[in-house]
Image (cartoon, rainbow, N blue to C red; front, top):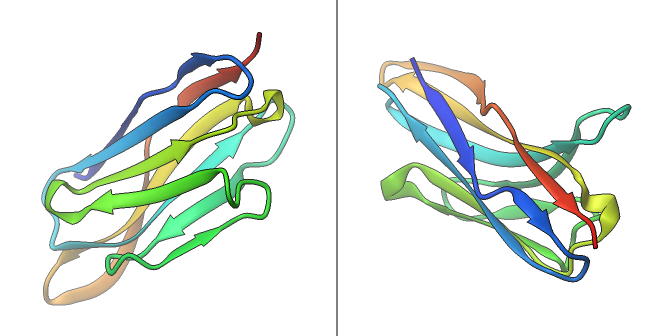
Length: 122
């Protein structure tokens, strides 16, 4: 079974920075796309950024220029560097990963982390 574990959330003042990490563990062949989402109370889960195994990235307009997604394939870990944080960035942040479990089975399964709270407040 594949597990994703996020870390790095917390309380930060407006204008501050945080770096989230998400480590995947378990038996797997490879991880394709990894991504970060967030969900504030009463809202739908919002896609923030994705990164392929080759390092190609995409960002939502709401975080472009402030957030940076990166990954370490050797560690099966994805990161989200968040700068210039605003109160409206307050949410639970989730990572996900599209995983190919076996070399001879091309199906990808999507796994989610448990979420980490980010609160931006003075």
